[in-house]
Every structure is written in structure tokens, then in C-alpha cells.
Amino acid sequence: MKTQVPVQKNQKYDVEVTDLSYQGLGVAKIDDFPIFVENALPTELATILVTKVKKNFAFGKALKIIRQSQDRVKPIDGAYTQTGIAPLQHLAYPAQLTFKQHQIQTDFAKMKLDVEVAPTIGMETPYHYRNKAQIPVRMLNGRLQTGFYRKHSHDLVPIEDFYIQDPEIDKAVVIVRDILRKFQITPYDEQTHRGVIRNIMVRRGHYSHEMMVVLITKSKKLPSQSDLVSEIVEQLPEVKSIVQNINPKATNALMGEKNKVLWGKGSITDQLMGLTFEISPNSFYQVNPIQTEKLYQLAIQKAQLNKDDTVIDAYCGIGTISLSLAKVVKKVYGVEIVPEAIEDAKRNAKLNNITNCRFMVGKAEEQLAKWQKEGLKPDVIVVDPPRKGLAESLIRSVAEMSPQRLIYVSCNPATLARDAKLFSEHGYQINQPIQPVDQFPQTVHVESVTVLERIGK
Image 1 (cartoon, rainbow, N blue to C red):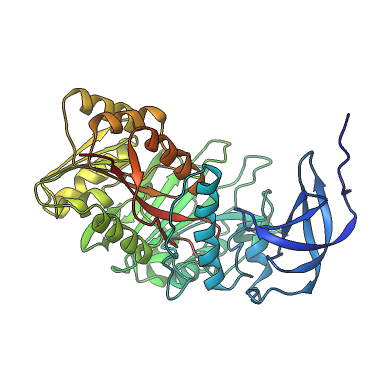
Image 2: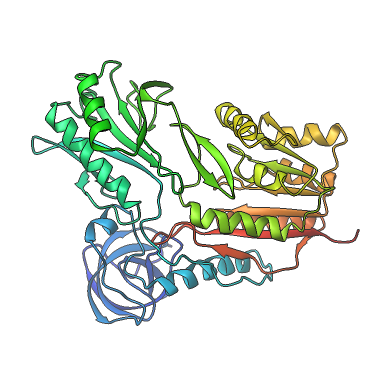
């Protein structure tokens, strides 16, 4: 027998919002049937319009807030919600920090793990923090425009001030946009797969203030190249590198494989944890350096390292954590699946005169199994995996190597809780509070540092 869904599409309902989902949507219930409501906060009474109905839940949007939450603040600009740039901009910042702490608590409760979660470490200025922008360029009403896509679509919303980005980057994007207009460079058209310029990427060193402009093109040829370059150099004195990235494929992938340096160097440098890093167009480099330093300092502190320790850094990227650890331990082994990242890591080690790091290209789970067979006995293992979390084989390898401590830097509380449960079955437990750090203010992303300790020596 088919159970009756208590709501209908395009109907209005008055509801009380009781919670926030991990996507930052208000949660209301009618006869125990959950409705996820955009722009609604816990404790609010709202008139909503149901926009989509599924078997077990529905989506809606708030038409009118009858009783407002004390944590509601006036949004800066509707475009930031439309495009998903700042989905939590209507929630006061202290409440955003609580939401992130609560998110971790919820995910661990689902796994029936009893843990303490410390209050989230926030930012003094929770906007203008991103040191990298990737901005689509499209034709809109006959004019080249830059902006961001409306959520779940490829409709461009023109935006000049991106709120969460370094304001110098926002200015640079507008200047480059105007130069592209001046030389009548045609924007890429997704329907016809024609046109020249697909995206503008700008990176800026938080401490160095060195700027890189990457023009991502469909075509190999960039019309008016020398004029474009000299105008960019003249109008943006911080620019140290101008690169063309060629992406000829009809794909959603942002960048192609080929980079062509048009002016200056092929990379810029910036500092993190007192170390210098070289950043190239494809480098993975943390977008919020202020909070990244807090995150890494915590990881190092919580690992209780000493100068005789051997550490493995699984998912080492360009070596940001590895090289920070190398200053306080005997030896660091880093592994990463992206060959270019390992090239960067080796170069960054050289740049900082660090000789006690060994970097390998490979899948973390396979390399750990190899090291374990070779008899490598780390004192501490650090993992900073992608959103999907850890492979079970990696968890087994870690358990067999039996380090005293595992430091888990996570960007997804759901996979962190799942993995912590598996580690508990291998004799590892969480004895100190999990520490959330807000790397992405105004968004729903949650970063945290967790220490898992081996039970019994």
C-alpha cells in the first residue's frame, strides 16, 4: 500500500523550522515528513511554498517569515544565495560556528559514538578570505560578463564583488574582464562549443601579495595576446605571472592539461607556517591561509611530536603539512596520487632547505600497504583525505602499522564519523575533543582535527 505524502507541489503551508540540514537548509516537518526549506532558520515560523516532492522528503522556499530567529541577519546580496557562494549569509556568524560544531556532533551520534566536540574556531573577519578565484566568462545579452552560476544550472549571474574573496582578486577579475571586452575576445559558448575564453582564474599570495592571472581558453590561439598581456601588466602591478591554460574539451572540467606562460614566471610564491611555497596554476593550495595555519598548528600540537618521531602524511598534496611537520620530527614520508603535486612538494622542500622528507606518487592506501610490508613503523600518521574519506584498506594498513596516534584532518564530518567507527574496531579511540576550524565562513563546509589514540601500548 502506497503511503500518502502529506504535502503537494506548488502548495503553501505554515511551518515551524526545527533544525538546519548539513546543506544549510531549514528543516520543517508536517506529520513527521521532512521539508527542506531554503532561507529558513531553526525556531522560525514561516509560510513556505513546496517546490519539489520526493518519496521521503520535500523541498520548499520561504515566502514569508512570520516569526524570525534571533540568529537571522540581513543578507548582503541575494546573488550569493542564488549562486551558492555564501549559503549561510543570513545566519549570524556565531550561530554559523555553532552549526558546524553541531554538524559533527550529529554525524557521530548517528554512528553511536560518544565524543566531545569543542566550539568551532572562527575568523575575526569571516569574509574576503579566499586567495583564489575561478570565474566563468560568458556572453550575456550581447556582452562579455563574469560572475557565477545560479545553483544547479549553468545560467550566469553577473557579480563583481564576490564577498568571500580577497577584494584585490575581485578588482583584478573586473579589470581583466574589461580588457577582454576592449579587445573583443569572444566568450566560450557551451551550446555551440565555440568561442575563446572560458574562465579567468586569479590567485594572490596572502602574505606575498604576488598575483597570478590564468586565462583558460578553448582555443590554442589567444587573439590580441601581446596587447592583452601588456594591458594586464600595466593595470595590475601585483601580477608576477600570466598563464594561458588550454582546455579544448567539451567538459565541465575547469582546466586543461596544457599551460603556456605568457608573461613572467610560471608560478607565484606565498608563505604558510613560516615556510615558502611555490604555487602553479594547477597546484592544490589551501584557499584560506589564516585558518589553515590555525588548523595545521592544532594538528602538530595535538600529535605531541618529538624530534625522534617518524611521521607518515597520507594525502600530502604539495607538502604543506609534511614540511610543517618536518621542522619538529626526525623523518616525514608523504604520499599523494597527483604526480604534479609531488613535483611541487619536492620543489617546496628544496626551497625551504628541508631534507628529512620523502615524497612518493601513489594511492595512499596502496603506498601505506607497501611501507607496512617494508617494515616502516611510524609513530604518528596524519591523514587529510578528500570528502569521500578513507578507504577501508588504508584503515587496515594504519592499524597494522600501529602508530601511537593518528591525526585526522577532515573536510566532511559524515565520512570522519564513519572512519572513526572503523578505527574503533581496530583499537583506536578518541580521547580528546574534536576541534572544528572554520575554513569556509558563510558556507556549510566543516573542517576539523581529530586525534585517534591506540588503546594499550
